[in-house]
Length: 253
Ligand SMILES: Nc1ncnc2c1ncn2[C@@H]1O[C@H](COP(=O)(O)OP(=O)(O)O)[C@@H](O)[C@H]1O
Ligand SMILES: [Mg+2]
Image (cartoon, rainbow, N blue to C red):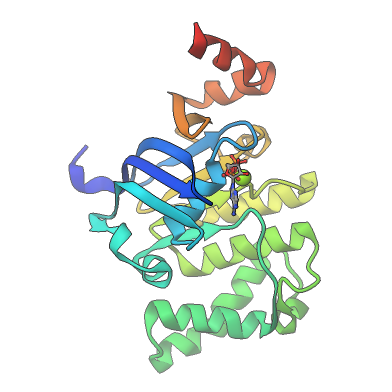
């Protein structure tokens, strides 16, 4: 495949949080149309990596290279990264009291596409469609962002943003956690609808469950700050069956 099909290129990424190195040399490449999954035990550095990529100030990238569709991501601040086409669905979405869902989405769309009247005209319609896709009641449009939302509603709203913003690269951090089976199916439907031949999705997950609905092309295992195994979907099934200990055992052997 041609080199310009690479949407996200991470080389030897190191991340420090509170003075401690938690990501220790991760390299990963995602091409157009691909879905990757990173699985791993709690505390292995998955969220730290995702947060650092999104530009979260608490996560310092001490070395490494990250290119988003050929552009140097590390020279951009968090909002520039978003506008350049990187999306992160947070493991723990924050509430924004005082800002309604509609205003929040409208600002995001404006920031991404400009405030040409035609953009704003189509906004309402697009928002309506996104609500439908995520099977969310339209009363949410006038509620404050994530304020009093249940765990499942927060996750649906993350994927609703994904559906509307149409990023080049979406990183979904534990989007499946805390979802009952019906919500998981709805959220997965949203992810699958947003995924095209021209973008790439990185699912970060502890459990294999969501991978039954959003099937990855590549599965990577993260342990102690590094990707220690990569394979196809069968790797996720092995992990579900056997846990993570056998990989640990193999690594010390
Ligand atoms: N904001 C933070 N402040 C202090 N330590 C953190 C912070 N975020 C992550 N860590 C630490 O970094 C390590 C990796 O955590 P995390 O990236 O959340 O792992 P995972 O997502 O794989 O469960 C853990 O030891 C965690 O306590
Ligand atoms: Mg995490």
